[in-house]
Image 1 (cartoon, rainbow, N blue to C red):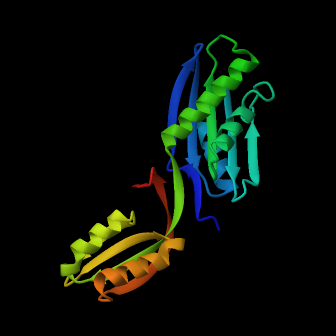
Image 2 (tube, one colour):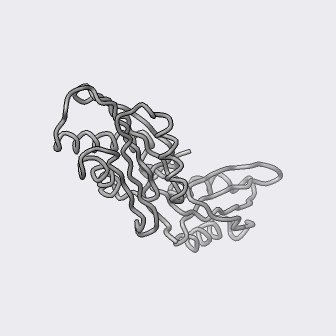
Image 3 (cartoon, one colour):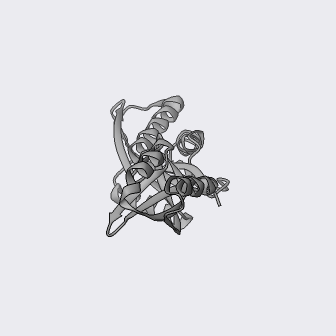
Length: 215
């Protein structure tokens, strides 16, 4: 199981006009081939009148599933460039569709490659390229008098405080990468002189952009 990989945060779309042809880039994070195919069909249904709906997707821990389609464009000028954008960005579990409405001016093979490359890039950028990181979700219960010191040190050491709840004590939910669990426990033990209740309540992937949590 990967603990960290690049993908996009959410569905994104954007469009560009190139020599009177309109290119609309769509991108979506997907977790299975069925999900990728459903997304592609959804875009094709939305743009039944389009000249082409070119797609590519990459799935799996080792990018072991890679598919693409030129959808009627000359071989190698559309689907492969879209796939190459995904691979060059080192993205996993992503599907991209680039829809083209022909504007009357032929672009040539090189022009098509550049246009579909750009269409894929704007779709992916609209979906926001992020790192998916697997975090352990840690809940710590401490006395109010310790909260300021604990919070400052957690933020200083770049742990992510996901939530804080107050009752007769302070309950802090912390996101911690697996390899840092022991360091976190040692830090909390030292800061509180062992006056804490510590619980690991699960794990989940979260999106990070420049080390900040993306909601």
